[in-house]
Amino acid sequence: MTTGQTIAFFPEAAFGPALNSVGIAQECRELGHEPVFVCDPAMEGVFEDYGFEEHYVPMSDPNADAGWEEFINTHIPNFDKEPIEQLDNYVTETYQAIVDSVKWAETELPDVLSKIDPDLIVVDNVILFPSTKQYGVPWVRITSCSENEIPDPNVPPHLSGCRADDVAAHYEFESRYEDVIESIHEEFNELLEEHGEDPYPRGLFYEPSPYLNLIKYPERLRWDRWNTLDSDRFQYLNGCIREETESYELPEFGDVDDEPLLYLSFGSLGAGDTELMKRLIEFLGTQHYRCLVNVGDYMGAYNGEEIPDNVVIEGWFPQQSVVEMADVVIHHGGNNTFNECLYYGTPAVIMPYVWDGHDNATRLDETDHGIKLHRSNWTDEELADAIETCLIDEEIQSNVEAAAEDMQSSDGKAKAARLMSELLEAHA
Image (cartoon, rainbow, N blue to C red; front, side, top):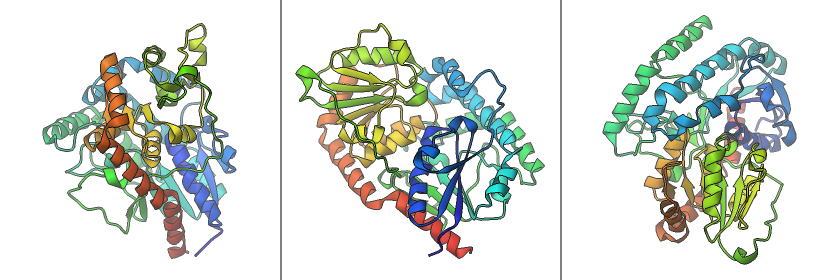
């Protein structure tokens, strides 16, 4: 097998795709390759912490006053809306920012790739960066969000949160999406043509790689597609969990030390809705569980707040260690937490707010691997019932145990590294 090749990883500037790529890069390094990371300056240090070289490409205007965190916080009122109601606000504004990120990246990306001189380029994003396709070496597309990012007539539209059998809702969402995204998509197609690429069909922002496409999604939860994906080009990774060395020592919880352990995390961005987080913490204080709550960069918002005795809040937890110990996880449906829960056999209550969280929550619920709840429109009784169901429901418990056994035996990150090595060898 060919070794010693340079592999340039180019994940989206978000922790989900970034850490997913880290897991695969770790395995590539074990096989003797040299993984490096191309990333936005905002992600500086993320990959160096795992021992990888970083090369920076601006993905947004460095002089802009508003950052991604502020952008998210302005949309908190939209997080309570149904997915179809988020199309003409959060989704369109996010896609506009994504298209703008391509414009910014393409000013320096070609030179950065020339400096790295990779033998393989690996992209985990929702949009095409023309330079990655045109550099002249094989390129791999990773889909670390929901599997339905790769469309199919028999699969709910990406971002819709539709159930698999609700065909009428599929059509309604897809039609609305294509209407509201039209002007942004036309702008993207103009960008593609400027870079010598053919325009994409309406609503599509990325294409499958002709070489290799890796789908992180758990195989037990995959949809029945109308068009079978070609196994020579599309491979499921069945989860892809990176190697973490940091463990976590549980604190003492006094009178509830023998009770089930709950972990609550809405991700680095969802933590910005501190009012909802405070409501959840207050609710958890009425329950007979040990509770760990990740409040992200917002610890200051809890100064002076009375935190219940059975609740511990932190700005960061070594999540994989905590998820493995937890009996139930309450989260937002982000791809990493979604996969980590299934990998460790931990049932989840997903309370989604945007993007693939809607799809992941619905799929978890309809396949009986956990419970979906609205992020804020719930009563204490409803949330308490959902947690208890995750703890005692035999079908949910059996399903997550089977998922864990399946995913751990598959070792998705090792499979990805092996497939990349085979691709490098075929094109040596």
